[in-house]
Image (cartoon, rainbow, N blue to C red; front, side, top):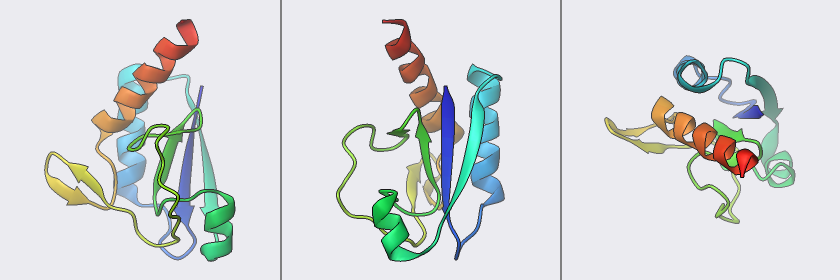
Amino acid sequence: MRIDFLYSKATGRSAEAEEAVRLAIEATDPNIEVFYTEVDGMEDARDKKFLGSPSIRVDGVDVEYGEREPDEYQAGVRYYNTPEGWKPYPHARLIANTIVEMQHRTKA
């Protein structure tokens, strides 16, 4: 299992998003590897199906949209609906839930 952490060259990697990933991994499976990918501009965003910075995928599945990703790609900041309101990073629970879902899929 792997986590892809995609981020915009313009915005960089946010400490809050990295912490959310760390907490999710700690709560689910400490053996998960994280791969960081920088996205440089709109053309690269379209090529990578980048939904904004940061975009986090577990085994290729977006933590927010699952397999129902929108067809709109952008290189700017992405916002997530969290228990504390809209934030420019996902809540660790959202990432952990996706990890658990993908673990169940691989066992089935």
